[in-house]
Length: 583
Image (spheres, rainbow, N blue to C red):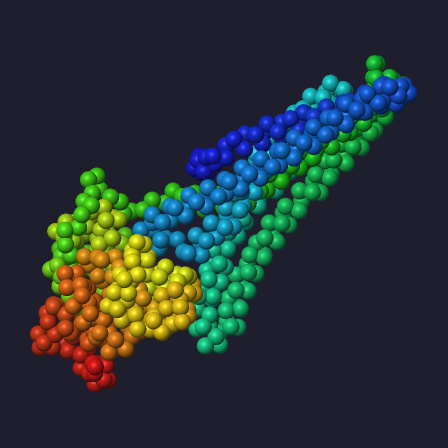
């Protein structure tokens, strides 16, 4: 895990190293100051030597300024290094997410990924800044302060050695009991973010069903769980300060008691015993040692908090897509012919029942194929295998006569355009959304695609026409308008295979018919696969595939299926009675 995180430091290694250098210099100067203060007191103030006081005072002032400057530089370089490290972590995570297959994405919720990109990265950033600054400074201060303390008085310095194990043991006990709580907290954060995201995404449904109180209760329950866990962790961490103060006060009392006795015994003579200045230095060193231990405690707390976050970050960074190119991938798709050969598919490896079972289907290039079936018949699962959004468990799918697993994934997907029922529009103009299909598309190409998709008519009625701004998620256009823009976007790819997955469900039957006629006339060589709930949307297809419970029930033309397929006939009659087939 640490190796993977360190790899994301990259160009900020220089700032990280400089921080340690500046911190080392800062520590050296701070350690020198108490000893020089002892000299100032013993040889300047006590002996009333003003020239010595002035010269030593000037040296102390210069050291203080240099210490302040190196501290400032250390803080600056630490901020740059930690911020850059966080930026690289977010980049590495986001870039890896873009490589995920659908099955990888199914493993992590959107809310969990967002939490890892934000809260978790911030925790690791703060921990890293503490590590390269405080984690370098504190041990160095402890070592140097102990060395200088033993130089002054060995007997009194033993007090530090007695206190350090007490404080260290207490801190370890506290930290070991806090880490499991923070692991639980960050998993709960995922649930909280998921509730908020789901609520905001479906706010219209929430309000239309007057479910605000239910959503508040759900949010409050998870928020209360986070509060309780954090409170429990903070209560345990609260013992850190009393433990620190106890060790500090005990050290001060022992130093003052034994130090005062020794000063009196040697008549305040630094040559034969302990002096006032040296006792002052020892007290300062005691403070530095114990404050450094407190810094280490703070670093440990942050490490404990960030450890859970680091594990979650590395989990995203090390997740590998289970869809990869072969050794010698094919980059050119010959045509839009599709063939399913004994295909079996499941989403989970240990599923009790396959989603698709024994699928055999042949589609010629340029054919229009309709797919009909009830809810849960695996229509969408079938077409998602064509652009290799998932891999088959058994069997083989070929496009243009080549197994889809032998294609370069990007080349294959460039030749397969999918339009989903719930396709997404991004914030930006209509033109910008259309250019997702082809970033170099001309205005003429966009207009042509929109005319085929029956979108040009309503777009030209907008005041800004193709420069009309689409809000996030396309909330300022209707469902049917959104679907037609998405169809036009797919057409701009000029694919060899066009898949419409119930993507005209929100348009009226007249517009649906116009779209189908335009597709047949304007892109005759493109293989068109249309998933629909309405028989009217597929009855003119070259062949219609009827799916039932993950299996092909029947394949044929409209008239043939009315005679041979009970499922198709039942759907047709139920829709005909309801007037759904009237055009």
